[in-house]
Image 1 (tube, rainbow, N blue to C red):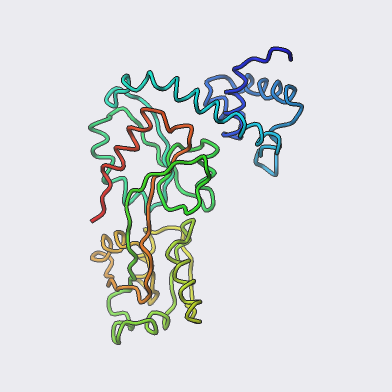
Image 2: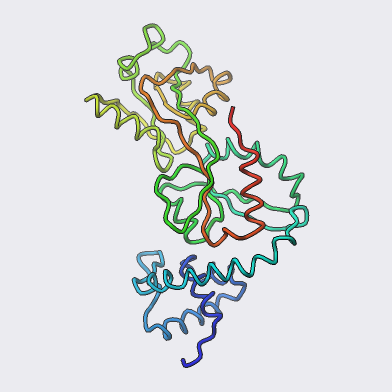
Length: 302
């Protein structure tokens, strides 16, 4: 292939980031058979499979990853130059864009009531598509372009991801009204006397901090159940003698109607730091930047 088509560069980028022929085709705006043909030409050009199937998932080969790293600076520069002329043209009131946001039920609870009411007025034709969170899939969803934004806490994002801090939130313990622990002084012994509900939620931020601190004290708690949903946790606690440690905003919002008592954790837990994450490919996208700024401007926890 003496004079390869330069369009193959964008096809290659889409295939490597989406890791799916159909999604790559959708991103580039061509048919799936055309993208399959492009993959065949790329494989012939580089004498490498580039993508191989592992179980049910397509993964880049080492050669494919090396090429992606080599081409990314060129692709990033191309996006910046070609997007520069669109800055003045972006009008949120006229945009019909769909943007996918990956978020747990906790993140949806804290973000969406603050963002969506104004967004429907200020950008009435933008469609925010919220994707439910799945354990251990957060960062990979950005890498493979399944979603364009992610809200949450991730301590070690990859170098090709950008982040913007949104807010910090402290932890609080919740127990039901009339819980037997309320008959005595609330301290670490009372906290550990009863079983706990844990929250898996991807990084397990508060639960991980609790267990590390307890280990340093040579203490241990009993976890009866681990839930994936922040929103169901208060109702489980309200119907039992279980204790949960969770973000203050959800506990405060559900306490009155669930019959809960909020207590200070008997351990010094660091607050949860929440950020908005996106892939480098969207850094200079004017519409994407506008939505990032809009979300950040609307989010402020009391």
